[in-house]
Length: 191
Image (cartoon, rainbow, N blue to C red; front, side, top):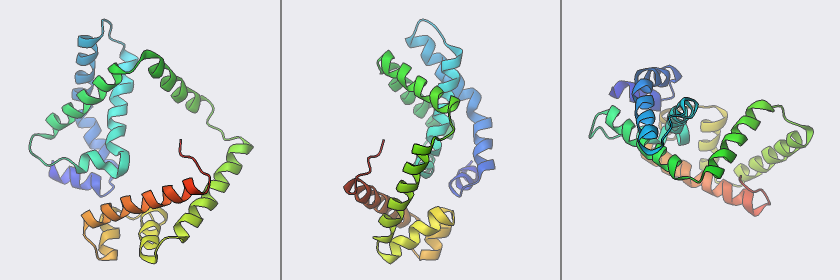
């Protein structure tokens, strides 16, 4: 299991797909059980959506939740805790908010073609992002270029920059915050 986790952290899409294939039935069963226990009806479509959302959450922030797994329990137990927390959080939300988020997801899927205004805004945002990166220290610029433009893994970037992996994540988090602040200062609002 440790090899699979290390491969996922290194950026192996195939390893992540193997993890999903192995644990999806267990996660779906957990979600379904919680839905049945805390709601009178069991909506299969909602259970499927939440199951997928749980696996998507594992990918967020460069596989942050997977990197946080310390091996104190089995990975299945760790994943059940993540699934339980996410489902219970979902069930606590007011139904209006749930419906709004579902409608937003459907609207993004149905009309994914950008209009001219969105294209212009994206171009402006890219320009602002380039300015924000140019305002960084040279070492920080290098980290961003290696990570986002050359799409190197965290391990490769850390090795090239001669820093530890934890230093890489710490520095990357700090840099992203600086870029966000720069963008906000110059009129860009994050949605």
